[in-house]
Structure formats: structure tokens, C-alpha cells
Image 1 (cartoon, rainbow, N blue to C red):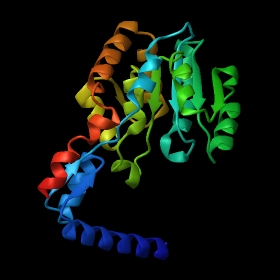
Image 2: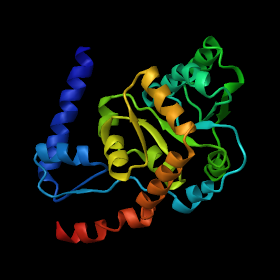
Image 3: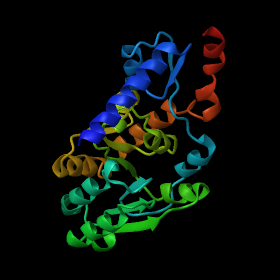
Length: 246
């Protein structure tokens, strides 16, 4: 509405002012860095989100489990958990014992639970609720694929995909959409499958990942290699050179 458009215009003016007056600009993703340059910033550095590497690496040791898809994070509409639910009936036709673990909570949870019931997914879906950060590895150990089916919203386009990096640090192959820097990370790393936002495309990629251990192993090795320096200390290190230079 008019109020939203006015608010967006004011925010854009403030961003341009900040970009042109700052000595240096730190951006969390390459798309955001490109936007800041368009807005007039001269010195820009990209510092992506890091991960608690040791904590997530603990998830690499697997325990026996059925074919398992995993989502960890906030349950909001933008993160595409509903799309995975809609794809799951198609996945079950090829992988009858597949399960989908959903670790997290949020305002969208009741809607997701209703959708799971509507689709008759039964015990194929488990809502695990919000869990302490130091307990996440226990869920990762019993999973095969990390799911991050982002919607193409404006803020997602410029975000740094922390969820994707955390999955990768844990050695999980990633199933994600061609949105923002998630696409760039997966293309650079070769650590997962990029899909269009349709249940059919998501299901096909999930089936491919769940039924091909060699492919999962290759993606897992690529993911671990790509994130070996993704801990927060290493990610923030370039700032020590950037700050004196501005």
C-alpha cells in the first residue's frame, strides 16, 4: 500500500546516504555488495555469515536412520518448508520410508502442521520444536539432506545463507532454490542440488539425493571442503586489513 511504498522509499534514501558517506561498507553477501556499489559506496568488502564450525562438524558422524530430509531454522513462510511438505507425497512414491525432520519453531508452525495433516503425511513428518544450539548435531547425525527452499523475497535475495553454510559444515548435501547467494554458494561448492520452486522439481531432486549414496558422499566432501574456513574467526579476519585501509 501507499504507506509501505513510502517507507521503502525513505529506507532507500537512507541507504544511499549511508553508502556514499561511509568510509567503508561491510556487506554480508555479494548481491548486497553490488547493491551498495550501485548506491555509491566506493570501498566495499563482503563478509558472509560464519558458522560455529566445531559444533556443526560434530554432526558428520552418522547414526543408523531411515532416508531423512532435515530442516533447521525459523518456521516462517519465507523459508519454504511448506514446499518440501507438498513435494513429500511424490518423494514417498519412490522412497516409501522417507521422513522429514523439522527442527525449529515460529508463527508458521500451525499452518505447516495443518498442511502435513491435509496431505496425510502421518509419521513421515516430525515437528521437533526449537532445540538448543548444542543439540542440533544429534539431529544432523540422523539426516541425509539439508533443506533450504527459500522464497524469492527481496530480503532473501540479499541475505547470506547461514542455514546452507551450517548444513555444509555438518557435511550435509544441500537441497535449495535458485535464490540469492544460496545459488552462488552451491554452484561454487558443488555441494548440493539447485531446484525450481515446484513440488515436482523438489521431489525429483530429493529422490535423486536419497537414492544415490555416492552422489551424497561427493556432495558431502565438497561441502566440508568449502566450509573448512567458515568459522567466525576466519570469516571476520579480512576485516583486520579492510578497516585500516578505509
